[in-house]
Image (cartoon, rainbow, N blue to C red):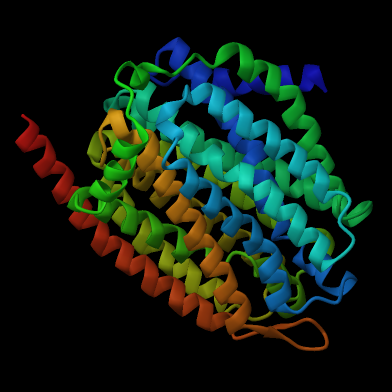
Length: 424
């Protein structure tokens, strides 16, 4: 296992040699990408397990949606609390503390025996997981200059793609051939082996502590965020991005199996093909966004993604190769809007308050994904054969929300440009 992890780190670093990131930046971002891999995999693997857990525990779509959303809503609570203390600590120490608790919570999921115990395990995992995303983005924002941040975000999003390419297909393979809880064991073990590398190679990120901010000032800063048009726009933009994506994500696997007719043993291929295309797209998009503009790349990717969303959520029985091709293209366009979108969001705030803002951003994203997941469970329902009904309605809602995020991207881009002009 240790040799495998070392080899994976080597591959990730070797893959990034064509980047203009400095060596120390490359190592940092590669490790954070691997951390992101385990963090995202824990969250992602829960959703494709729907076609296994729904019949096993006799769950309705709304009950399964509660299980999935419990992580996001718990993450919302913890990330909201972090707004008032995130900038008080070294970002590395806070990240490592949160990651340790996250791994314990993930291992606890193995012992769930039904709806309520799984919700409890996911809440515990989400409380710590909610602190991770903001710290990762804050570290990137503090260490990587803006002119290279698109590439850094692209590599970081590679952790998401790696979770899709390697983690989810392998996790589903284990779940299909052994038992549903095996993916959580794998995440906990891989994260445990990664932890010493994070401890050694991530530098202390404490420059923001040179001018410490007391609690009263933090509260004032929190309310100041809502008086800053740029930051408010960035938060709304971020929430729309995540809601447009997660309104359809949780029930994709049950829909593919029980509606489209994809055999359960072939479902790992959906995430394998989608993840491979997303991994490639994440790296290319980062470079293109840095060169031609983050807003332009976001808008183009978002508009094209709506075509595939419509097709997926209205998909009849189709040959497997068409399903795989569709998901490969959709994953690519979804990644193509997320990479520049995240880079735009990090530029909406100064370094002094980036930890609090990114905690609020993570909070908003968790709330958005949790609400979108709950909505998907309320709007849809399953019959006695577990076929999903009203899934096409989720697709229409997703398209509307994504179009709203496009409009918000134009506004955010203008406000960021005005900020630079005034600052100059």
